[in-house]
Amino acid sequence: MITDEVFISELDASLKSQVILKAERLRLIAHAITKPQETRDVILDFEAGNAKQYLKAKKDKKAVRSETAEQIDFIEWFKKTYKGVVIIMIRNDGSRTFAERPEQLLMGLHAGATDLYVPAWHCWIEFKRSKGGVLSEAQIKFRDYVLGIGDKWLICNGFEDGKAKVIKLNKNN
Image (cartoon, rainbow, N blue to C red; front, top):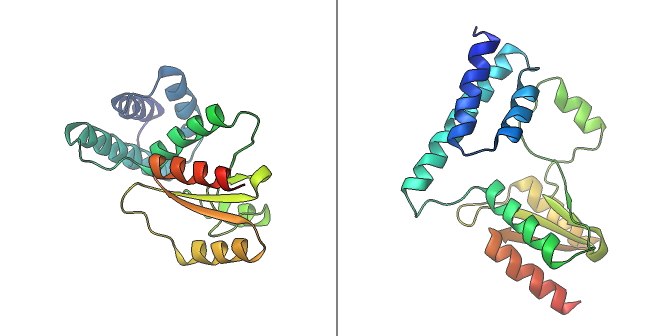
């Protein structure tokens, strides 16, 4: 069992190595410190892995960017390009504790739901890394449901692919 001081120090060092700004680091640490000890251990392991992956990516220019980084760039581009068009992130992934999962299912969590939704276009967007992203069985079922009710569904393999597909979709509307 590590003390709060050690946990904060290690988490802060890991987040710094990922070049995360101080205000965001403090927000993340404040949230993480409320978690139970076993969750804190997982957080440190996860962040240490992220830090290693980030540092490796900086050394290896051929490294594939994370889905998160690609999606953040896409959202920034989308909001600048389509001002006034709402795009919504659907929180459907990530780890959950044993207690959180049932509660979130009751709140509407749905396996396979896409990452993003554009209500004005009735368009669901599943985001993946530029290389290596694969649809799960639940995501395929969700895609089939969405297409079956007449909505649009896109899979975007990274920022550039997402940008091209949204531009094409917008031209066809």
